[in-house]
Image 1 (cartoon, rainbow, N blue to C red):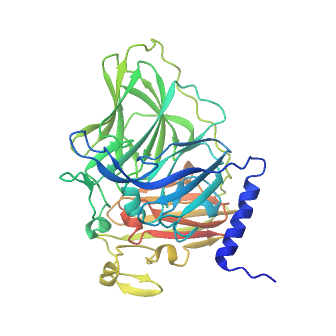
Image 2: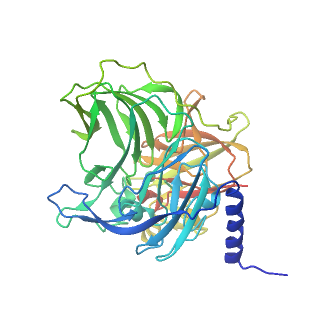
Image 3: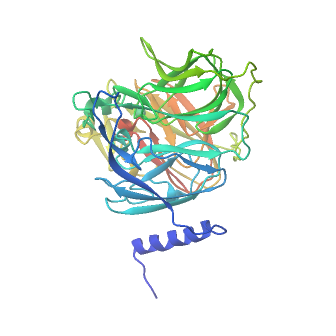
Length: 462
Ligand code: C2O
Ligand code: CU
């Protein structure tokens, strides 16, 4: 009889998974996705370059684009100084490919590589990012867009992917502030920055034509900033949230909130005149800024189109609220919070000791994160209602891996499907989903400072 150690067993079973996934495909070597350090012109031109952690030498990294139902194969090659792994945010993925260091795989060490190979079931706007020491690795630039195309092309002129980020830069040196894990960020709103970019560019300017119809795919890659965005010189409709199509487009009349990790797909018509500039506007507390400018050039048309149709829905198991198990998640802690003790490694510790160990937040009185007991064990196919209570004075963007959930509206009806939902201070949110993807899935706050200091747990689906 042959005995396999755990490492050999994992290697063997993933080889089998590779064979079955590749049935019917030619076996070409996967494209590399190289994590490395690169000097990038992030600040305006008269400043020096900034050393970032990049995929393939840029941040955002390369756009990965695939047809719905298609296959993504990438060899993550680690050429920088820390172990890393890549998470495919929002993809209903095979658990082994979810890219969570310490849960679904070991971190890929410097000089090593890891092959990701998975099928993308849903069309939409997704993104990928580092999922080891994410607070630092994402803040230093390790992310990019993952676009899954609908089977049929939309009636648009073109599209733009717009990835928003918020960097914390030392203006003297033009380098990223090396203050990860500063207690003030961990315990307050998270690591907010001082330089806001789109696609790695400060004050991004694009061109457009009058009455042109664009699809804009907005992605928030920042650690902690909730962007408030509005449109100027653009008539727009939201057609998808977190990649998932809305049942009917929603006309943009007000400010849109884009929390960390969330996406909004917009269809916009350019209504500004030639020579004018249309904007995606970032609405600040006191001031508004141009997040993205579209300079309107000659060559447009006089005619506008009819309002856009809804995107084709993705195929999704329908959750049965009547038959659902109810789970509750109480989010506590942070500055000005009421948390006085919580359990760490099975022992109740006073807040002072938790803070010493780097914890400021808890879920249901526990701070164990990835290594602790799962928050819930669910049968495959089980219907779940998850009620989250934000008993803190800060906003939190709660993300579930591996499955999408509906936000449940106040009146008990099912709202949009999402993978990340924002709870403002004191807010309660119920979400519902069918636990139909087996494996170990993280549930965490995507304010990455919070995830690093207690706001992380996992759900196990049998
Ligand atoms: Cu986008 Cu666990 O992350
Ligand atoms: Cu949070």
